[in-house]
Length: 89
Image (cartoon, rainbow, N blue to C red; front, top):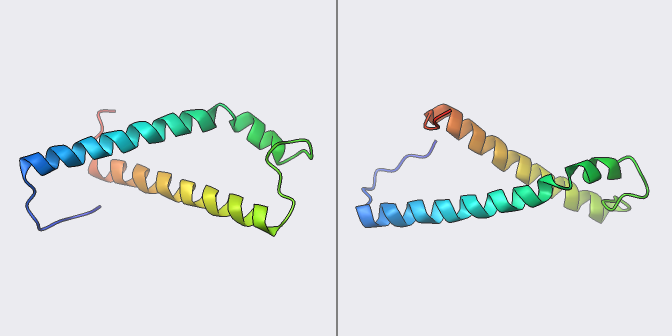
């Protein structure tokens, strides 16, 4: 959880909320696009015919780095939401 000793004006707080909302909407759109191809990605790991292929170290580094970053980001968000108990569900 992040803490700040600096007071934030109401105007700045509204700007910050707006920025977060825009980022959230963009992330949801991108996750939605990825979600539709999840079955194909899983298949690709078990087939030479899949579109997601790992044929060299560069491919391996790209996929593992990007997927690890995504996984870490999602985990951090989930932990923050669980810790603060701010969600309505």
